[in-house]
Amino acid sequence: MLTLLKAVLVFFCTLIAACLAGFLYGSVAHFFDLFFIFPFIVAGAIVGMGAGAARWLKLRSRPLLIVIGLLAALVAYPCYLAGKYSMLVVAQQLATTPELGAFFQSSLHVLSQSLISPDQLKPLLAQTDARLVSEVGHGGLLGILFQNLQTGIPIRTSIIGRDNLWFGAAIELFKFGVLIVVCTTSLPDTVRAEALYRTGGKRPPAVKRELNALEEELWGKGE
Image 1 (cartoon, one colour):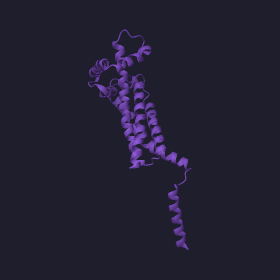
Image 2: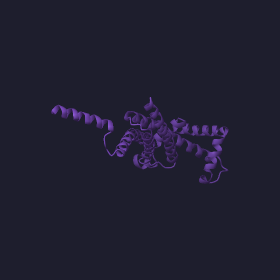
Image 3: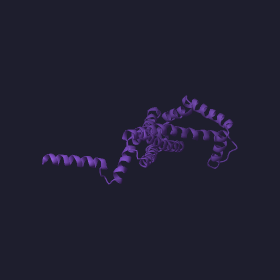
C-alpha cells in the first residue's frame, strides 16, 4: 500500500511536468517545430521530474516506474496539441480584431482579455473550430492533430511535393514514439543509476547478508 501511494505521488509530479512541457512545446511549435529535438526535451523534463520524485520518495519498483513513464507520455502528447490549439485561438483573435497593434506588442493583452470572460472566449473558440473544420474536417484537438498530419513541416513541399499526409503522419508518430520510448526506458534506468551512484555500486545490505550466509554455509560444508 505504501509503495502504491509513493507511485501515485511520483505520477502526480510527472503529470505536472508532462502538462507544462507538452503545452509549452505546442505553443512554440505553432511558430516553428524542431521535431527532432523538442520531443526529447519534453521527455527529459518528464524523466527529470519523475526521477527526482522517485529518489525523494525512495520508489525503486521498475514496473511501476515504467507505467508512470507511459502514462506521463500519453498525457504529454495531448497537452502538446492543446498548446498548438491555444496559439491558434490567439492568432484567430489577432486576425479578427483590426484595432489591435503589432502582434508581439498586443498578444499578451489579447490572451488575457479573451480568456478572462467566457462570453468572449466561446465565440472565439467557435471561430477557431470552424476554421479547423473548413480546413481538415474536424475541430478542437482532433482538428489540430489532422492539421499536423496533413501539413507536416514547412519544408515539406521541397521534399515530397503535394502528398504530405504520410510525411506528416511519420513526423507525429516520431514525436509520440520518442515520448513513449524515452519516458518508459529512461525513467527507471535513471532512478536505478542514481541509486547505484549513491551506494558506490555496492550491493544493498540485505543482499550482502544473504551472500555472506551462503558463503559461510558453503565453507562449513567444505570443511
